[in-house]
Image (cartoon, rainbow over all chains, first blue to last red):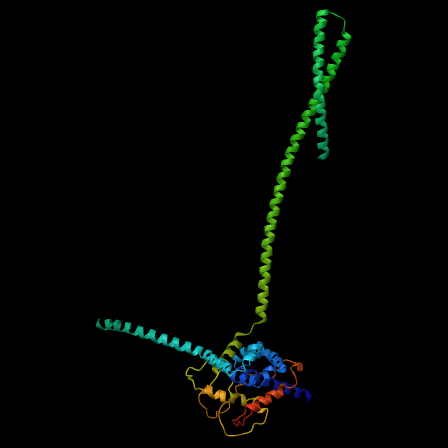
Length: 136
Length: 255
């Protein structure tokens, strides 16, 4: 009975830490933490270091928002933690993150556009060929 | 061979001594011939002296012959020595050549062994970090399908979807449920989120972004000593409380 209890506790801890580490992907949340002084506490800094285990493949496969790992790495540096107190810093990070997020869809739209243009070029070339065939 | 060399030197010295005595012998012969000539002309009975000189001459001749034989022998030995010296030189150069080749071979082998070791190291490293391609594809599928790493194609500023968990999602997870949330009817994100979103969205049915269907429930976090302090859980609760300026009253569990 006691064994089952501890397994349950461990499971809860797993899910809690999973959620928390992914929250770190949100720059607004980081700004929130910084402004309330959590990032200055030694306990919290140690906890962030402990959370680095999510980088291992057997744990990383549960992450839905992989940006959090990059943020976690940055959070190991004191300079970054200090800068996060500024709202402008958080806003900048947010903007850059969104732009990066949109990178692939932009690339895809560009490719589609290029493909469409290519097809347009090919179409007028095919028309005269049909005309010649018909005249025969 | 050294003994032979010593004998040879002694032989050469005796040859020199002999040459000195040859000079005497010449004198002796001259003396004899003079005496014979004198005795011819004088017809004196000096046979005693003549006999003595003749004997001496014969003796000298015998010595001379012996020394000549010795000289021939020594010449032969000298030639043999020269031949052997040439052999020795040839063998020396052979040994040097072999030494050079050995050094070269050693160098090449050392390089080859080093490269092989490096290759083995990298093979080991690759094998350690190997993951089945199926898993990788599954994971890639999962994070792309939910738009977590790539924006949806129809995304415009104002769309509330984000590459990170939003306020709403954060509150609808376990962390959000850890403290009792007061209910008031105001919808929306935090002020920060609202600015980014551009508008306040309606309450969405809470998604459960945390658990994918194949989360292994046997998964446990690594054991940690309580070095980061006993208060971290409390901090989580504080965060959630402070953040809950409003709440989406989610009635379902996060299981």
